[in-house]
Image 1: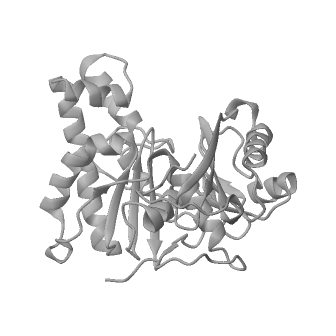
Image 2: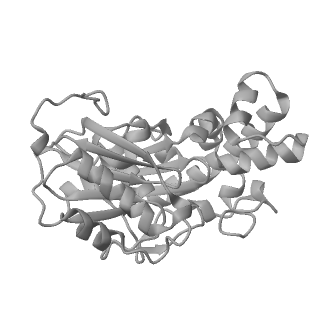
Amino acid sequence: MNAPAGGRSWAGPREAATLGIDIGGTKTLAALVGPDGTVLDRARADTPAAQGPDAVLRTAAELARRLGGTGPVGVGAAGVIDPATGAVRYATDSLPGWAGTAVADVLAERIGRTVVVENDVNAAALGETWAGAARGSAHVLLVAVGTGLGGGLVRGGRVEHGARGGAGELAHLPAPDADRLPCGCGRTGHLEGVASGTGLARAYRLRTGADVTGAEVAARSAAGDAAAAAVLATAGRALGRALAGLVALLDPQTVVLAGGAGQALLPHARDAYAAERLTLHADVTPVPAALGAAAVAVGAARAAMTHPGTHLPADPGPTDP
């Protein structure tokens, strides 16, 4: 049941594939990924978040055993991950009790294989760099706009973690359009407060009194709802301005926008970005992600493939400009 990622296919043996697992707040997805990024097989389960970390990791281990394999396993997980230990340093309440969980150690013990853990958005950035919308680029910024807002930075083809594993946490950038709007961290005035699914839903409710999701706001805008269109325009403008500043600071080759809300905001974000970016970055335009729901699992598999001591499959890899 080959399902190519990034429009490619690979017909090699399953034994040569690497397992990647995406542990999210609502679903856990495991995928067998070929040396070229092709998704050969996948398995999915609801994440038992309310039952605590042990149940979450038990579900991930069950999916790993279902798909099989013998090599190292990559995991993309919510929260700030310690790159040295694979433990969760910080997490929001989307996974109750998740902070402090030794993901790598517990999963390695349960499935009997080496486990490499990345933050989920970092993993998505690595996946899109390797096999998706940013293939061929060495320096990539990925922005994931879903229920919340996340970012991942790839430098020289590898994830940039920062000093504490928290690089890319752009949700907490100050944003004028988010004045007095709450962020997931509990403070106000941050980019996530306006440019996220939660932010879209809250802004629409303040305008109309209607309690709908961010996805429904996007759908209403597409159907001609003026209030929804105004909410999307404000959020897209805030995101585009932030991207212009980030591109000036980080100088990436490619900027990728991922997540359902990200696609809805992309046209507005591109316009605001183009108005603010430096001439130096005229060739850097935000592009939509290509790997869809498999991005985190594909990137997690890549992290396992390229971990020190792991055999690296033949691949042309990213290039500097």
